[in-house]
Image 1 (cartoon, rainbow, N blue to C red):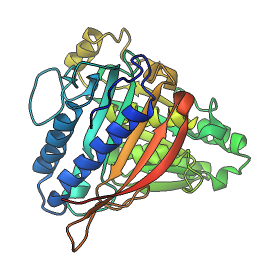
Image 2: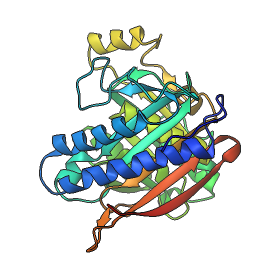
Image 3: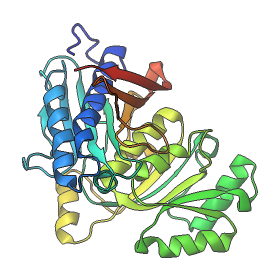
Image 4: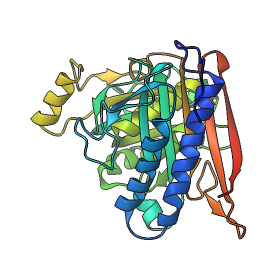
Length: 325
């Protein structure tokens, strides 16, 4: 799994991308036995243990920049944890070993392993907290403004896409906190597409022709926001956000981590400060973007992954793989 003699100052190399693809695949396979077992903690632990083990084999100095906290509370990967052999490129990492743990524990669709990687100092360095988000695809890039009412954003995206407002699809997580947003979409004449979990999928969907989603909006986790923003940066889409400290302790923690105004609007370039970045995801259960892990009678494990690369290697592809024990 190690890749030697790699260009130190470049993240988007074929070797490093393939290393992280393998990590994502192995984490999804490690989580597979926990599908439908009602235990999201052990499922998360299996994925995390696999990621930590395999990341430590890569020739890199990888720093977890957003996630579970500054203390090692295994099995979670924690902020400022350093992984890799300490050779090769120095990179920022945002990772969720099992995005959609509740879905997976219930045997439901749309759980994923997701990882974002960027040049060191490029990814948002923030606590695991709530984040207000809005995302759209490449054709509407530059048209969204998180400080404006949702109705105004819907109109702006509709104009950019050459659509009527009534044909705009707005994806929102089905939560009580989003009741006002849902009502505003309906009042505007646009369509609501509700989902239960995994807003990374909804954000990426805005940039894919195969999925009929024009805007993602709502409040979700900040680590997921950083990961989604990385994928959209590579795809040419747009993403804006605001961190939402719930108390003085969270606010002060943001300050301590170098965010001078924790409640300020963040553009996609604030969250991901470079084009030298990439995103990988592997399906654990079947979902909107990817098929889940499949176990065959001969013991083979089949995975499907999405790889989205920025920089000079800019491209995206779905990769199917078979693993034999």
